[in-house]
Length: 291
Image (cartoon, rainbow, N blue to C red; front, side, top):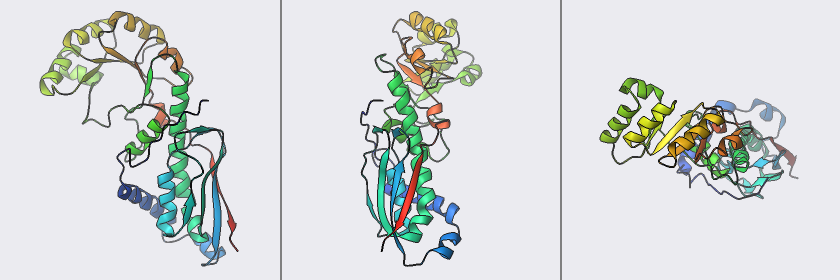
């Protein structure tokens, strides 16, 4: 796997430090509650420890800002060092080195690893898909199938893996799906209504048949969403459109079949699995006492 670097900090993704701390504090409250009774009963209050988070399988690391925040919230003077950059494919190794209060490191461990493993898993799946479509001209998109409340983080992880962020939500892009079409009275009518209502936004519309493709083109849609079509059907749609609009394939696409869709000639491939099915990256924290 190529080691192309896609640095995307949480701040660059529009996630402020205060928001990160709020998310982390909420997660810590859920896990620690009234106190870590195991550590409090086995570890001396003044004990110090040195630790290292290790990546145990190939992938892309993302989420260090949140992992660090988890340790910092419980130990304001914890010392941390990042021996790895985010957004880089690597086989494994040290991810974060730290030294501080032993009890604080133990209490923050699971929260830090949960954030880091989840977001690194998303970045890793994005990187696999991006690698799979190399040379085809197609680009990999995420979707709105994200964990509620964590969309900005998960989309930042997609970008760190080399993917492209689709619209952030319902507010920043028009995507007319089959239910909109049914309620508007047809593809063409839905596109015309959207154009009249919000002329400054580009319009994408889902098309399920060659007839709907023609209707969308006649109404002036800039992008067509080809949802749940086979690669054969997508290739036929590419031939029908002949460059008059951008095309996005979607539905049932995974790292295993994404290249087959990319070779049809579409410009975009959206993969909901990037955020709804990415497996967590295998990471662990090991600690040792500081004399």
